[in-house]
Length: 240
Length: 240
Image 1 (cartoon, rainbow over the protein chains, first blue to last red):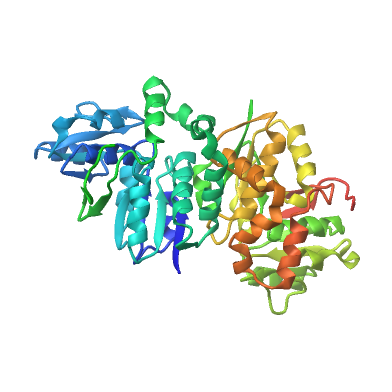
Image 2: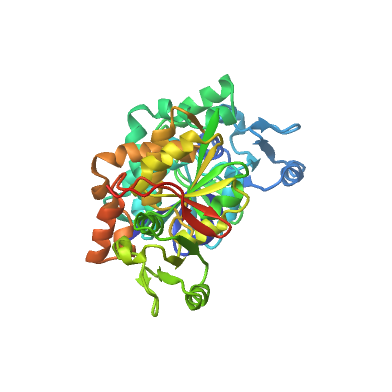
């Protein structure tokens, strides 16, 4: 039987094997949610890069720069890391260079996986459908917060595991714990998230609005796949 | 306000500060449960050591050797790692040398903490009372399984956080998640644990019996503290 396992922080990645697996990288607040939104608005590609300097270099080649440091938009960048900034039809066909504290680094930390896709609540069912149609096992990589466990990425891991449980065996305790946590929190996901550390990490109205947006399920029917250093849309966009 | 934080695996320890904190090290299955049981049967001290060779060296100095590798008793050792092996009044006044895959290593991985105590369901309330009577903040260190997250240590972290929540603020998402997981699982802790990976890690009847024993709450009213390389009983033993 195919298996599903969960890596609760990039710091624990050396303990996981991901050869021949599909890795789902998730950073709910906000990198992967914003990237999926950008693909829903028809960007051509997103290149995740580790440093601000990498981003600025790509700007000289015509890329749109996006990202954050400490949750704030970077001086001189075209866009920050709020999904609302990517709801712009002027981004149609553009190439983005993207750098964030956690999500971009998590994507770049995976090597040797068979396939890497992005996870978010916004395209949860599309990702589950994609994984069910594949042959291989799955590893969910939570981007976490500066290497630490965080609640929102773990809740996503649990929601995805919940959708896959009939076809995949849970390989580790982290997957069981994530699913249980999701079942516990699902009746009031927003209320539960507010008890977490995120409201303290990134305070303010904009962030609250972003949280509300990022926990919506299945707003978009698409997947994003990472190939040779860039993310591309895998299926037809459909903004519901 | 004092805080409580949770380190879900020794691999994440470099991300935590524990200066001036009391660190509670927990390895429910089975190291810290067995150690607390040993103190309930009046051992004089327990010296956790990293290697089999360290243990054998202390045996020459009159220590009783105990521990496991891969869940199995070590050839030539006096005792394994089942709590039932420590329910022996002949251990009264003896010094133990103890080495296990996860628990002993976790205890030894903590440096610079103000105080280190052992955690187990068997002495849960005694530990909570001790922490409430202290001035400082608390870090719960889950021993995990070969560096990975495990369910039983996390459930203990949640149960302890539940008892401390009125006097301590939760510092991180890991503590919130652990408490939620405990609340989710508490109505049938044994049933929940059976869904985890532990039954696969250590199979067999003896292990099932050990699990039943190790999830009992408040069987013993004592604490064990780590000082200058050795664990000692902190309060009066009382076997209920």
